[in-house]
Length: 301
Ligand SMILES: [Zn+2]
Image 1 (tube, rainbow, N blue to C red):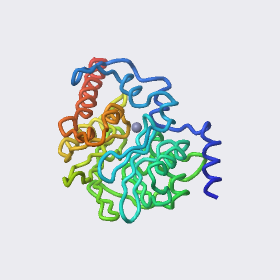
Image 2 (cartoon, rainbow, N blue to C red):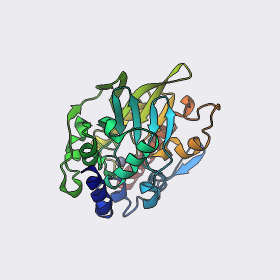
Image 3 (cartoon, helix red, strand yellow):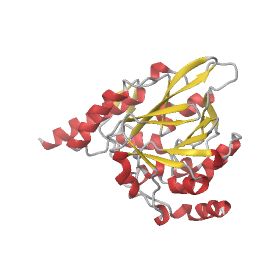
């Protein structure tokens, strides 16, 4: 039964194409305005291509690895998926595209865990490249699917192959998810989507406790409407109040995953512990957001 689901996912994968970053790539966002932050120059187009990579990058397994403590990376080269392991079963954050679910399952198993031990499925935000596979994960694991209230309408519209998007628990800003002694707190950091959720938790390593921030995308759309501006104005403030020693994000490029992964070495300091760079991505996105708003104002004059 379960292997049939995997086979049908693999067969149907080529047809799966829904809303989200990939849809936004065609046509690609403009190559202006540009901002330079922390010595690097970005345009809306380069940010999107940095996030998404090629279609091959979106679908190809990145070596699954331990980030810190009980938190592991099980995503593709450019689309994050995180496994949080507890003594009472595991939590998966982000199913990504439905066609990637077999890739994520393999990564979980390559690390020595069982996919069927996933008890809770969380999401970063209601775009297809992060949450399209939720129905498939639910079918394979029976996990409870948790969704931020403000993202529920967008999730309900996400129906790969006609499947209803499962939603078992609706949460609100500040709510927590608890399993096996692990607590994740949901922080509404809207703008990119109305229910964009940044999650915080803690992890232990070497006898110390570290704050882990699984941040939501803060990438502004090409057209910033007044209600989206109000969301971002709040979110850029909120995100900087969140406790953070280890910053993660829905795309590896948001936290330099590939560079940090390359520095992972037994006995060496954990490259993912980097409190000083926790808000570098917010700096980039906030600068771009203001540049986009300024450009829109200038165009109206
Ligand atoms: Zn998105």
